[in-house]
Picture 1 (spheres, rainbow, N blue to C red):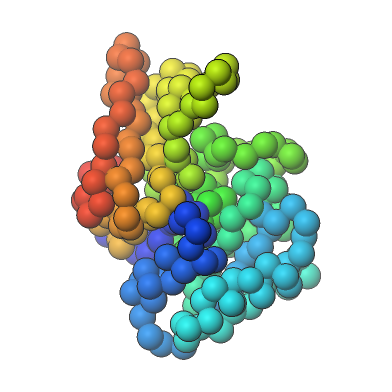
Picture 2 (cartoon, rainbow, N blue to C red):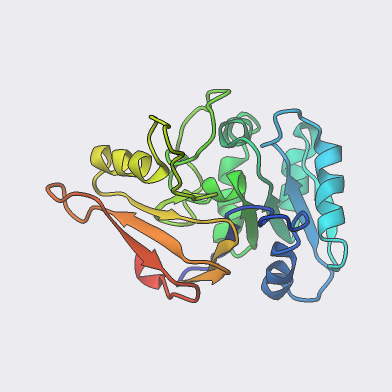
Length: 241
C-alpha cells in the first residue's frame, strides 16, 4: 500500500482571488491544525528572490498554523530532511527541475514523500509531481539534467489548462499541443488541470478537488487517435494510479 500524500494545485490563484486564497482551506484540510514545519522550495523563481517568495507564501497562508522555512542551496538537504511537509511553489518548471537536480534533491524528496512526508505543490510544483515535465506550458529557459520528474502521479500534468484559441491566431491550441504529445508518447496519460482544481492523493486513492472540471487525455493504444474526457470535481481517479 502506498504512503504517498500529495496535494497538487493547478495554480496559486483563481481569477482575481488573492495569492493562495483558494488553496489555503484545502491545505488546512490536508495537513490539519497541528503546528508543522514546512520546507518551502522556491527554485521555480527565475529571479532567485527566495526570501521574497517565502514572504509572499507566508502572507497567503498567514491564517494557517504552520512554520515556513525557505530552502536555499546552502541549507537545502538539512531543511528538507528536517521538515514535516515539503511545499514547492510555481514559476518556471525548467528552472525548478534544473535546480533540484543541481542540488541533488530529487532522490531526497522522492524518498521522503514515498515514506509519508506530505507534498504540496502548485503550477511548476505540480508539474514535477508527474512522471516528466514534458507537458509544462513553460519556456525552457534553462536545461535540466533530465525531464524526468518525481513521479508521485504515474501520468503527466498540464497545470493552468485552458483550451482557448484567439481568433486569427495561427499557433496550436492547448488541446492540439497535448494531442501532439500523445502522438509521440501513445502510452502516456495527461490530466489538464484548470485553475481552481487540484489532485489529492492519499495512498492508493486519488480525487479531483476544487471548483471546475478537469480533462483527461489519453490514447489507449498505439493505433488509436488521442481522446479527451471531462473529469468532474469529486471524481475518483484512483484507477489511474
